[in-house]
Image (cartoon, rainbow, N blue to C red; front, top):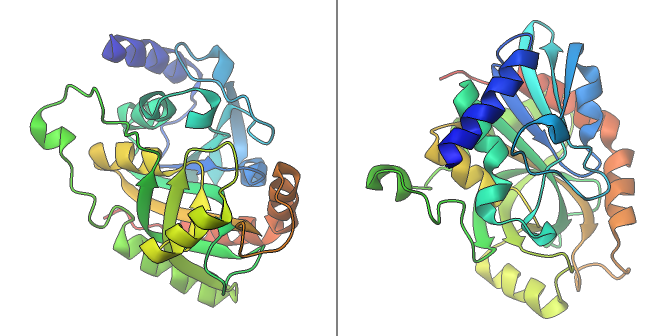
Length: 273
């Protein structure tokens, strides 16, 4: 059934894409401005794609934008869905499986995240080098692929070469970058101070409500993945102010220019192999 749904979605998308993308990027809360930098854009509304899970959260537009960054064909997914909206991890990763069907081999995933590492501050950008899944769900649950495609190795899930290149790009642009481990909680509530203390003990540097299912699905499809978090606030117990979704989007908007400058440089030189 799912393969049939993917085929129908793919047929629709191919009718609207002007060119096959070489790189896809998923843009998190407040980070959608990068899509506006693409030349010769073609916009596909997710609501029009058969079987596609539609975002229902402010800051997630729910559109695919195909265009060029320089001469590089890029597909930007502006907005995503989350498990806290009532979707399963399997449903959340439907867009990633569509990207795999399109032949995308390089995927950049961005998100808004709360800082757990006390050395971080709001507005920092963190290159993700590993993850902890606290969703208690996986996009591979119910997957009927052969065993070698279900029991996948997540060592180096965030491509080590991509991580090194991103950090080097930040240095060359004089944009300070953090590097660390991302933990994902289901939400939609922000974590308690006790949960954040637990996450610190486990080795997490930042927390989000997305991304990790997408990375798992991408790695199952043998995509190479780069992850970037925008630290939009300090997590409960690390910072002292009350957390809100408005703060998340305000901080992301504040660093938008720096984020766009960094991502344009990273995307233009993301290794193929």
